[in-house]
Length: 149
Image 1 (cartoon, one colour):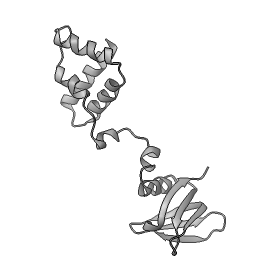
Image 2 (tube, rainbow, N blue to C red; image 1 turned 60 degrees about the vertical axis):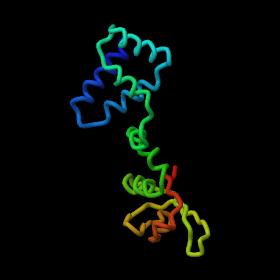
Image 3 (cartoon, one colour; image 1 turned 90 degrees about the horizontal axis):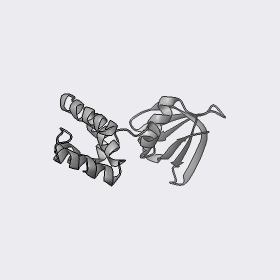
Image 4 (cartoon, rainbow, N blue to C red; image 1 turned 90 degrees about the vertical axis):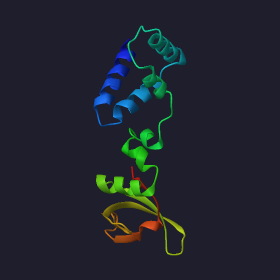
């Protein structure tokens, strides 16, 4: 009953909100139920025991789009997906980072103990925290940016 009450609350909120969050939340809850629980809930709706819309529950069985799947990812999980998001995360949080990049000869290099000082469309300005040296790289050169522990 608690699960159905929660799913029904989300269904009603979905109808009045302009957000996909209630449906995505309901989908995540639904996907964690056993097949027995799902079948039982649908059967009780069909039998009229629960007053609800069966189509809502049938739609919860459908896979989410890629955008919807990303709705509740953490900042770290999103950053792990691409370099630009990694750079933004490290810059925004002022983290001392490790940057893997290609030098002018396209040889992979590593910079440790750097902070991103400026993040622009085509370039990244870094400060080497050990030497105080400022370094500028083109965005295409950067392979990854991770927080230094």
